[in-house]
Length: 294
Image (cartoon, rainbow, N blue to C red; front, side, top):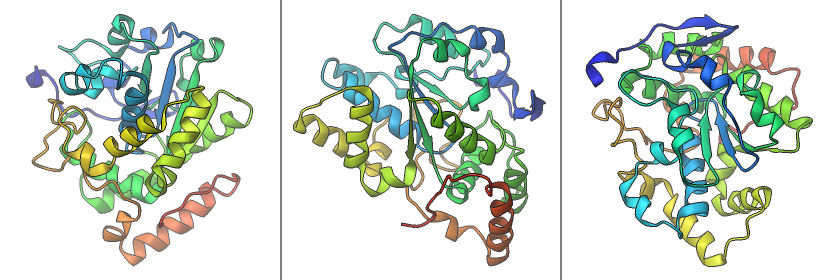
């Protein structure tokens, strides 16, 4: 199947950079029929979406169907709404065939692209945001090893394009701000920060549960917190990307470092200064704040 998949070209799609793997099924994505009990997990790429989807999967199904934890890859348990690759069922098809409820749905769509039935059904949405510098570094390494992402080129040129928003799913700046602004008028969105999840996983778990109306036992909370620690996920074949054929894990692992501040190992002093200046301009009209170190 991999033979027919290749690195795509970026193109402008309604004002957002996209690739065909995420627009080929557009009509079916936009007409997706949401349910009130659906849980949408939205984020810009490389912000912790896999991490939170694993948390949710454990909370809902960890005890009722433990066998799927060791036999079904996470990307099949939490389908990717907008994906469409030849030779594979589309995200929409996988979602329509899910037999577990609630459906936990992964998306990287900017807020203006989310299918409208999610708003009509008042489905719960969890958005995960990660600081721009670590997002850029993580995305760079991801694009190096993901055979269905555009060629990243050098770190220097990649960072430039990141600042220009020439990334799959568009501009980081517009993505995190778009969802943040929507949250102000929309009570069914929980906005999480990757940095908070790293700093105090258990506390964020409590916030997630309270948002979803779940009251797990202390024992379950402890189990979940333990299972979702980075090293445990990195060694778990069902969640670490090793079950995904489009990843070349010899180039870079899907679960690389999972920490805050790795950008310092990549940004030169000059890049950092340039990035900060540009960041101030792009983020000046928002009260959205990120931490780049802990």
